[in-house]
Length: 297
Image (tube, rainbow, N blue to C red; front, top):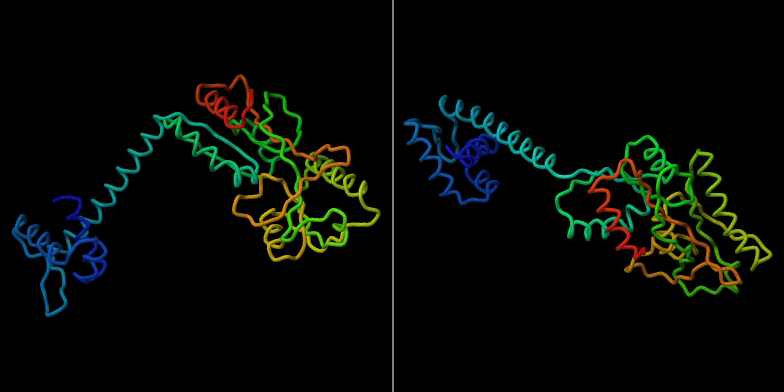
């Protein structure tokens, strides 16, 4: 018997219908009946007894069904074990990234990376930047990508400076922005270092605001996810200030980068963290690729 024969017996038992079983197995009913008769001929037994449009398994057929289910289970285990063995023969890298980077940048980066390097298995974790930092400090990750100027005892590379940008469903007028409602993006964490870092970003935004306006912003809604802020902006409920990297090509927003009157932009730094003592060829290749991807000399 072939694997397909075991599947036929198992599916017939499950569906109790030749028509449904054939459909589930993507074969014609005549072909299914032919394969069943061949099994009966090979073993010299009757597998089913037909009663009009219905059928039931003979004792020999019931035994073959149980045997088929057992064989299919073992075949699935065999395939899984072989796949696991194959993956273990590849290089492995544990990668961590802050959530926004993982959503908006990582898919294209990894897609292009795999075009150059195929013999590696990457396990990726995403979360708040401070969580990625802690996992790097605990040696749970080989490479960490996070946003913010955190202290790190190992090596790090500045991947990019991400401008903070105003997004709106209508043209943005800085002259009248203070009259518009604002959707506030502010992630909530209980980590002191994170709060200090966020306060520095908030301070920069407030300094930019106070340089231009002598009144408070008209905040009407606060969310801890950028996607939520974007959805409210899409509904025309107000504007928001978000990292520019979180704006997709198909987003239909008007945008304007935050800049002080002297021309300085407000940006957030994205860093790649690693440990020189843990460097191997896979990590080295990934870092080299990131330098090319982000055009770092």
